[in-house]
Image 1 (cartoon, helix red, strand yellow):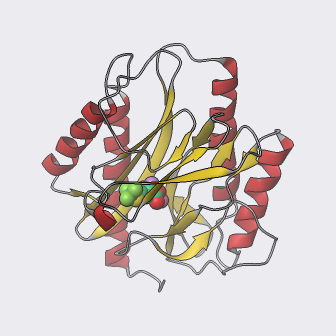
Image 2 (image 1 turned 180 degrees about the horizontal axis):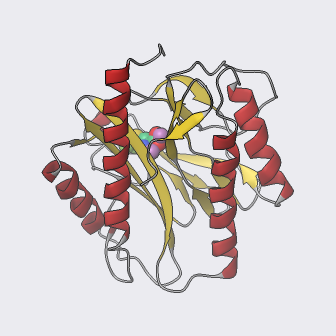
Length: 251
Ligand code: MF3
Ligand code: CO
Ligand code: CO
């Protein structure tokens, strides 16, 4: 990625804010009995009526406007007609394209009352993301981010997903650098002022392998924990500034 111009940064701020607003809006509809397809159409309408485009739709053949990953689904869950049930946790992942620039954010939502273990994994995932964001400083590295995330997650008895990570973002949805949820301090790619990246660690309850599944008509895959234990994820789009960072998808 090359540093963004001031005009591009303004557009990234707008895209980030719209992604955050969309996520907050869709999140309000999460309740027992709603289907993820209904959440998908609520998000799709909200984004279109805001003069933007849902980035996932038709991205490498992906069929929906958002990703909804329920319980042991790690990421890229495809909305369908299954009603959500009490105790489910789900990640809703929103990416918008506004004025040609991407804003990408996700969060966990609870359906009715959820178990203490579900609350715990979500809290650890949220804090793991924060630990990563704290490392976003000019001339730090992606290894610094991954190290901080993995250290925090291990300390809490959970496991990071190593196969999938964050990414550079701007005009391009998934740009370099890759931002793994593990690493060594000082290694990986240097963070240059005025680039944007996503911090989006995926956290599992066990060290079980992850399983990859095809999505019909698409080259995107979705992922589940092999042992069907819970997985959680939060995501923000972050701008590297000359002194630190700015979280673009924070409302
Ligand atoms: N929003 C996801 C991310 O955080 C990517 C979804 S790609 C899709 O990178 F095709 F599955 F929508
Ligand atoms: Co992302
Ligand atoms: Co995302």
